[in-house]
Length: 298
DNA sequence: CCCTGTCAAGTCACG
DNA sequence: CGTGACTTGACAGGG
Image (cartoon, rainbow, N blue to C red):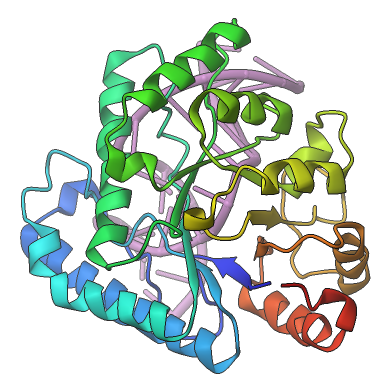
């Protein structure tokens, strides 16, 4: 089991998701920003390796405006060597990488313009991972998308769209249950028609359940990942104390986390900890997981 | 330095 | 109809 965190390291003084306003776009500006972002990404990976953290989500802002028409420079060629270095670091440390496009990528939208921008955005993600030389176990996680007043039709539209995706995208996309529309069971239906692996978000499953217990859901999702996809990925977060929908906790509650882990035994997976204090929470639970023989899975 | 209005993009729930 | 929430708040202009 590898445990990781998304996008941002709060301890290091750098950020790998720096961006800027579209109004101030220039090739110079974007090149400078990408270079800084890649430098920082390498620094974060080195930090992770030093602390035995081997799962990380790369920010979609690594190349700002990459899918926007304003972006004309060939960032793959320009930063090939730097991106390969990232991939080499990932491989050297036996790390796992994921990405999670923003809410604007909606593959099942009935709107052709939204579909176009979604395709450009998803292709940016897959080209970035490919430029790093990462194998297909580096995943891009998306939701089914909107309901548009007809959930069945909208789910079927996702299936059609998925089938027409280029292979470079199909080999990396994974489908995640969301917190209000599409449950794990809905995602599993899509899997049945497409083969897309299903990523389980434990909190979404709590808020928008399928009737399955957590461990049942883990088992069902695990079966959708082939060898080439790598181990099942799982998103774990805790709600902020006051209990409003959505908001993530500021730091991990270690007892609750341990109970969560016990409740998923004996399944193995790579775990993304979505907590505000990022790597600090991973550092808190890492030693517990490493020390406890019950969690020495696979 | 600090303050704050605003930021490429979608969808949905809430008031 | 306007606003906030979502995987990650940060930029940029003005005081």
